[in-house]
Structures are given as structure tokens and as C-alpha cells.
Amino acid sequence: MEPKAYPIVTIGDRSFPLGLENNSSAEAFLEKLKEVGSLKLDMQDYGGFEKVADLPWSLPTNDETITTVPGDIILYQGNKITVYYDENTYEFTKLGHIDVTQEELRELLGAGDVTVEFWLEWTE
Figure (tube, rainbow, N blue to C red):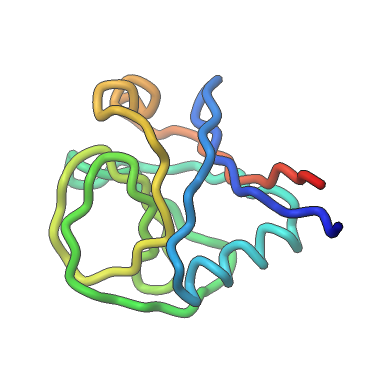
């Protein structure tokens, strides 16, 4: 049996499985993670509802109007990734979701910049 890659998001000292969406953007993100192994990003606060960082590459977009919930991982403009800790409605592509409460997420992300790591756990 081939090993399977499961994406993980680490914020501070907590790691969460990233449930990926079923779209070409999420598939491309997973493939990029397989190539690089892990991706550490310095994320900045934006609008009081998300942390955002530039990706080192562009991904295909599947934009649609959605309302985010805390824990959503969103692709914006094909080359920015965001972690939402509150609601926002806009046209963008959902990559996936981490299962965490809004309170936990606000505590982990803090008020300023934060480093978030996306990586893979392999199982057989």
C-alpha cells in the first residue's frame, strides 16, 4: 500500500489536521506540500478576522462567494493563503478547514504577526 499524505497546520505549539476541500486548488496545494515538505509562513493580521501571507507560488483558483467560519483556510488571488478566525463574505477559494474553536484560534494567532506551518504527516 502506498503511503498517504495528510496535511497538518501548526500554530504555536498546537497542530491540527487540515481537512482539504475537493477542488483543484486544494489538490495543487497538497502537491506543492509534497514537493517542499513543509511551508512556514509569517502571517499578518488583516481586517480583524484573518491572518494572511504570500505563498511562494501561485495555485489555480476556484473562486465562489462564501462566508468563512473560524478555522477556514482560504486561497486569495491565487497566491495568498489566509487563516480565518472570524466570519467574512467574499469571492475566494476555500482550501480546507481546521477543527478549532474561535476562542482557541484567537488565542493561538494572537494580535500581531504569527508563524504558521503547513506540513504533511505520512501514513502507510
